Image 1 (spheres, rainbow, N blue to C red):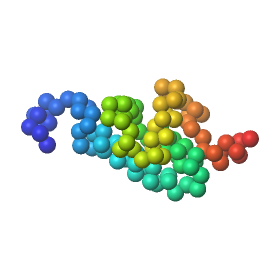
Image 2 (image 1 turned 60 degrees about the horizontal axis):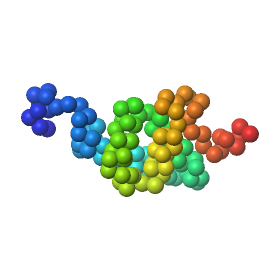
Image 3 (image 1 turned 180 degrees about the horizontal axis):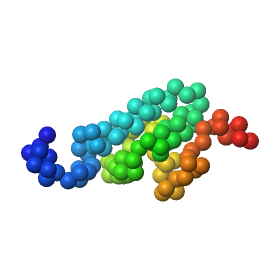
Image 4 (image 1 turned 180 degrees about the vertical axis):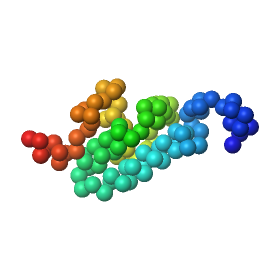
Length: 113
């Protein structure tokens, strides 16, 4: 921990690439871990929807914004394919998705028809 952090002088979130718990690299790792979990889904679309739903439901706006800013500044090469696509889909949704606007898995779409 830096002397500034100990003294309380560090600005929260100022360094988008910091390696700490809230750093962009940590968020990339978390997104990739979520992608590995949902990668077990037999349908690619269900995996992407699961990742997008998880991020939309359980990540704060600040976390989502930080990951999006990191991708904008540094590119998305550090994100695996499934979380990269999930992030693209989230970015295409309205700014404040309502529960009904959350990405639906393919199986749920078929059941609703």
